[in-house]
Image 1 (cartoon, helix red, strand yellow):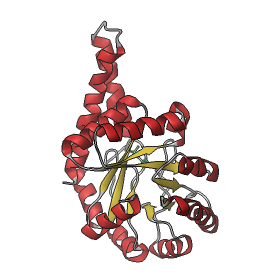
Image 2: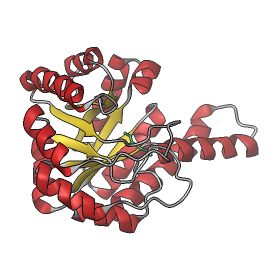
Image 3: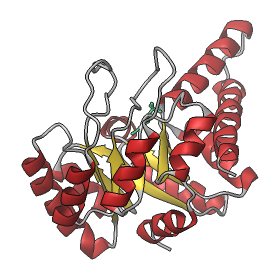
Length: 271
Ligand code: 13P
């Protein structure tokens, strides 16, 4: 089953899947161990930064080999693709899905770029995700608001042919200063208008009740990244402080275990 088919199935069932970003072998391992233990599929995501850090080929090879090793159903997705060139490289490297994020461009330009990506992804039967509206990225103002408008969503989907749409309904990337309040009523209107699987970015720190309400109202994919980084680093840092150990193979498993627990708990929210 390709990811477009999976997301359509989730949409029909009113359920969702977690999409977890990984940064190295250890975070990848923690995420996949959670998926294996809970016997639940998930999406693995790479950003430009992670691709540059690990190298495209090594990152893909590592993910593919580990998915096979754990005997899992998992899809590989480009998160926040910011150029046609990056999208093409990822499609060529065997990604199942790509996000093109032109959400900061005017609507007409966003449409033009997404159309091109849909065209490029077609021969690979790859899933295409786009974003409409303002979801604050790390370092951007969370004061600014630019929620997705249902009419724009309908027009955008019809004009581009994207398979999934990331929406702005009150979430933001990174840490929340105060509890987020997702606009569930707006989300329902976007669902009615867009009619395709919707994606929630900024999954770190959204309370479980709101995650479940969002899924009920049309969210089929939820991204989580910041919490994974924080969990891994905090745990490794604590371990380094309390141990004289220099063998990283004895320290890193603490981080792997903590990521496994974090993602396991995320998966439980949707079960
Ligand atoms: P967080 O870093 O807030 O979890 O957001 C993840 C995300 O949306 C990646 O696209």
